[in-house]
Length: 214
Image: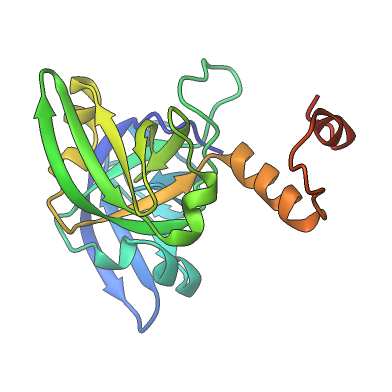
């Protein structure tokens, strides 16, 4: 489990490519301060397991399902990546619940500066639209952000200067891929409603009480 608050930007040192898999070596500093074999580290929003490490880098395997369903296959040596260690139980919780399980890959459509904000518009797969809510939470490349615009085909977020300078999203260009993870609560509610036969009048107070939401 992660918070979406990026701890540092690492750099891909080495990639060993299989047909549908990867072995990554990522240069880092902060996330290595207490690393152990088997630890989870979010790499551009993808939860990976540390398989080896030194004082300057860690290694992780990317399995075929992750290769197919995330943007990690597009990485090259020298690529910058967002890094976050798994959430600690004894610290402040500054973002939102992020699992590191990517729901889909979008692509940057536009970038626009306005005062101290950078607005980025990103396309998304159609099946994710039911989980996207104006002013709701979303994780893009593992970064916890607020949705400031949602249409049928794209979403817009705004980066404050700190997020712009301390994550990889602002470094990306038009057409570049972005890992998308929708809000966890929205996915659970959506799944529950999908499996339960809904009355014609839709969501009611009684329905929410019956399913433990009130």
